[in-house]
Length: 498
Ligand SMILES: Nc1ncnc2c1ncn2[C@@H]1O[C@H](COP(=O)(O)OP(=O)(O)OP(=O)(O)O)[C@@H](O)[C@H]1O
Ligand SMILES: [Mg+2]
Image (cartoon, rainbow, N blue to C red):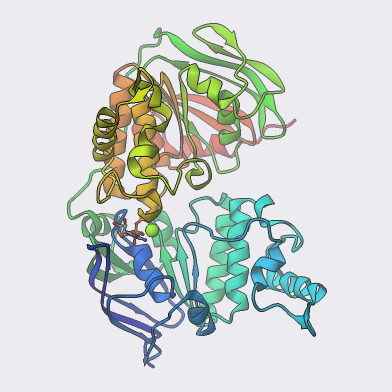
């Protein structure tokens, strides 16, 4: 049988910067092929070339042996080659069914036959086994649901190849399970799946083969069954990395309590939450997705108001009425949903980085650009943002590098209390180590950090103490000494009777 897809010697440059050099990629019918590599390695770019978003400079693409080159995504879709993007790009004020069928609606003469489109949308959701209201506005959906809409759209196109670009970065565990079931199903129909991810657990769970890129170059393709995490990391990073855990808390039990939260409640997601944060401490907040961790953080950051309970800073009760007030009180929050809240995509790296710290650079009504730019450069170097320079517009950075800019911004802002919500999601393994180092340095300097993370390894490596949440409740507060994955997980799944 001919191969489903063959890409050979693909080259692509953006204004002189070589994003892809002679890259190759092969895909079989009915295979899940994972695609890995560091931030900015060229993964999204290659897949955008395959699906008609970008055009290659040179190279060959064969679909079932036939040479193809797509001028746009519509042409690729017509051939059954479909991408579910890393940055979701739907029209938010349209309804779900309008989004799915835009440009190819069922018609009654010149009129769009809404009833029929809604019916078709319902049937699609039934096929992929999710329940979403076709009349809902896309904006009102969770990111996970939006993703399901994109998948429904893909399925409606009679796909041959479906590309998922970091699909799970904003999904709950239940949604991830749903997605994997759908992928299995697509696979059994002979559809080829390309799956871009930074998450090792996912790669070993669902892929048949893995291709790795580094700095725009092809490194190799391996059978998932014949490889392991260490081999993949060295293919991606070009060196070995060791996994570490923190063996003992680095904060004295009598260190000053900087933040104290007592009996905080709001809605169904935050119930009677209490904990203390000490000076210089990294407090890990563990739990499954949907445990209420982000909602809890939003109360402390002033984005939402608690219904009851108190927040104390240095022993004094405070009401934090807005995010601006939180920042003024020395609380910084790095959102897990960076695409919505994190960056101004049309601004450049420097502007994004210094934005919350701008008062530092103003004197006599003037902004000191030189010193702002110097700091922007320095902090982006620290997090290893891959960019042409601080003048690069953020929209043209790879997804992970956009996130690094947000990180650089909060590191520069220098808040007394930093809340990091999934700080390394979408960040490659090499850069993670660097980010961990910076976080520890901040704590050593006396900053206090709340680190919400769904990655057990990250929790065990960084935390001085661990708070575990389940369904809005704190189910345990554990010392790092002796903490194990199993123990944390059992508390993360411990439901409280109400
Ligand atoms: N439209 C564009 N204009 C200029 N440069 C671009 C553009 N799109 C991508 N690039 C550059 O091409 C390189 C590869 O980016 P790409 O998005 O393919 O990386 P990636 O492997 O998907 O990384 P990530 O894991 O962070 O998503 C990066 O250096 C990026 O800045
Ligand atoms: Mg990408």
